[in-house]
Image 1 (tube, rainbow, N blue to C red):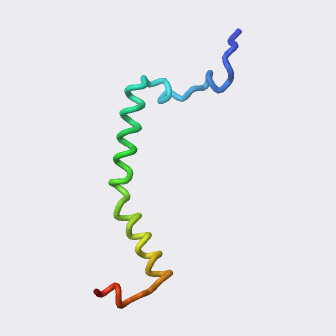
Image 2 (image 1 turned 45 degrees about the horizontal axis):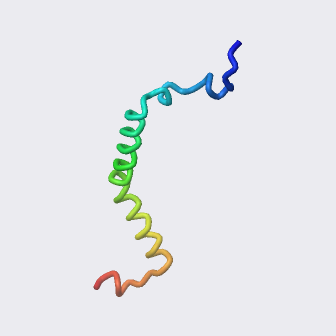
Length: 61
């Protein structure tokens, strides 16, 4: 009879990868996502800043 907890018996296939592979994927995601979404996040914050404080004179300086 298997005495492992249920969560360990149903481990996803990606969790069975070696530590080096998991670290490489984690580093890639950590570096890739900010590079991909930088413009979108910056545009969102600039839009919110203009919505909350519409100082048009400072915008054209």
